[in-house]
Length: 132
Image (cartoon, rainbow, N blue to C red; front, side, top):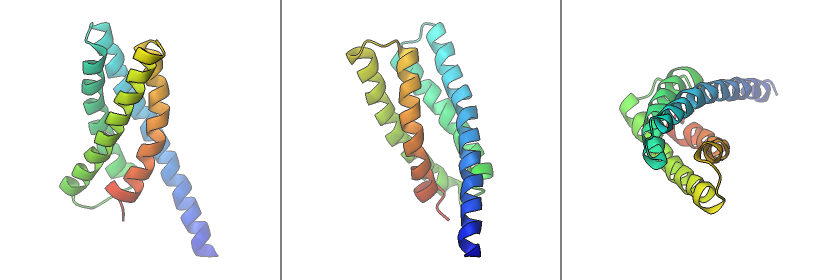
């Protein structure tokens, strides 16, 4: 019984850290996206550049702080970036649908896409990128 309670506490702490890193990453990634749009960069290119910036930021924080992994950084980095590669493709599809299909602004479309993609990324990183 004590083991189950300890795992629940660790899970809550990890989720809290993932959410914090996600908020920080959203500020960094979405901030870069917004700045690039302001500089009249095409929204798809802005998404790619801001995604690379955000993923790099996220890898550092999640490896060291959220999942406290001491595993091989290169191997984990490859896994981490591959999860985000999938997430990027999903994000691209969702954003395109919102902007081209529903005629939302790129800013609003990306806010909605971020929420969907964030949920999926947690499980990809927990159970594959930084699996203990």
